[in-house]
Image (cartoon, rainbow, N blue to C red; front, top):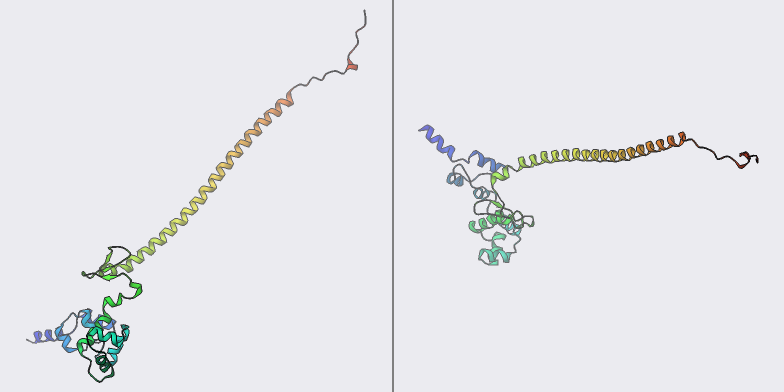
Length: 225
């Protein structure tokens, strides 16, 4: 019996993960009724319901954060502007349902996706984050949890690509240099060939005997018979 009673008391407290979520969001799970009604796991909307206390200031804060005038708020809540004024001035208590509705809209994914940076993004019925750029590309919580590892892997791959590109550039430069040397060597070989031919012609000219023609004065006259 003692163990059973102790387990029941512990079971009324939020789970370890839920307490961590509360801590990270700076929310105190102070409602004993909620702790009892939601033993262990508290859904996100239950957690957020304990972030703001019901009151005129918080009601006005939620309305202004949503960018609504009193007239717009009255139209949305299907009430009158006078009623909104009475709630915000403290002349009448703020009803829980109306207060919670504004808070839920303020904290909803749909409202947060109203930011221009999230234009086109939406949360599917399956709880997947859908991108407008990648077509039907959807992201699950598991996909998002892997993003840091994916970024780290991409960073390593990018570094390897830069290293390979640098090595490829060096190889291309070396190849260009070798091709230039090859072309230059061809020109040099051609010049050597021409030099050999010229040397051969010079040798032929140097060894040829040149017979000079005698001058007219040097030719002896034949004696007349």
